[in-house]
Amino acid sequence: MPLLYVALAHYPVTNKNGDIITSAITNLDLHDISRAARTYGVKSFYVITPLTDQKALAERIVTHWTHGAGADYNPARRDALDLIRLVDTVEDAARDIEHREMCYPKIVATGARKHSLSIGYAQFRGLLEKKFPYLLVFGTAWGLAESFRDQADYVLEPVIGATDYNHLSVRSAAAIVLDRLAGIKN
Amino acid sequence: MPLLYVALAHYPVTNKNGDIITSAITNLDLHDISRAARTYGVKSFYVITPLTDQKALAERIVTHWTHGAGADYNPARRDALDLIRLVDTVEDAARDIEHREMCYPKIVATGARKHSLSIGYAQFRGLLEKKFPYLLVFGTAWGLAESFRDQADYVLEPVIGATDYNHLSVRSAAAIVLDRLAGIKN
Image 1 (tube, chains in turn orange, purple):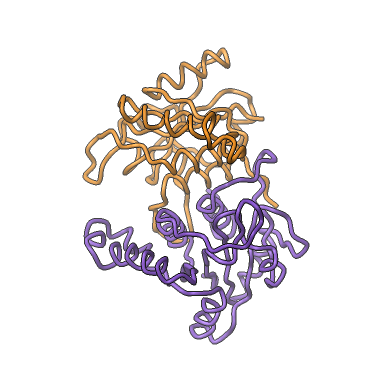
Image 2: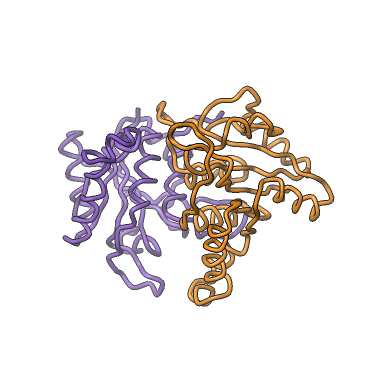
């Protein structure tokens, strides 16, 4: 299995006007992306927010499904949300991976717009075969700040559909990207 | 473009115990699947529920984003939710397609479990090239009733990830399936 880690960043992301903001936690992001991460063998799913109250909210959601009534009600959901780790920053996630893998991961940003550092899916699949740790970062709201993408080690190409419409939800985009990187094509 | 239509069924689906139920509308299902449908050139997205109050709820959500304040706030979201048609049954959706295409569509069921009628993604892509209309049906809750899948023209193979975990959300599964059927692999 590749050493693939996923993060969902609530900072630094942009709003509709392009300003850098901290977005709010969306319950279904945690469920959908952890279920997709579990399906595709992702090692951990980092939920990133620097806001104390938002971290407490995420903690409550995760605990309900991993140790509370939800864990008994739906063990499959528990297995997925067990992958979640709550951290303040992308760097904290990367340091946690470094601690586990004895190697600082490469940071791979995503987004709906092209970027000069873009790599394609086949190229990234090739990199993942080399057993180096990678942290694949998705942005909430209107997407990761360009300043963050500029500093990433790589930027993954946008998902191209059959039209020029590029407004997938982050939940859908994460699912599709993981399928492209690690799915079995039956 | 292929004559691909998508439906999200709230009946006939099963609950945790395998009983056939009518499930409730989930707001983000409408948003996420319509955005994925728009991305991949799907012709219409049928939201299927026989319940009057649930149809009224879905109608309110769709109208807000297609004609209400949401339409001005986020025109991209309007373009996606414009694809939604609310109908009582899968058969009503199929009849609507027949009216538009002058040809009754083939019904293609989905699900997380294998089925004896299963066809693979490459085979379905081949069928879609022939310009015949297809209605691809996703189930909410614990998935489409087996009795419904048994009567479909085809059952699409489950999405296979990198593990044996098969509990994607319907939002994620729909996004992945559409990418496999109509995405451009960059």
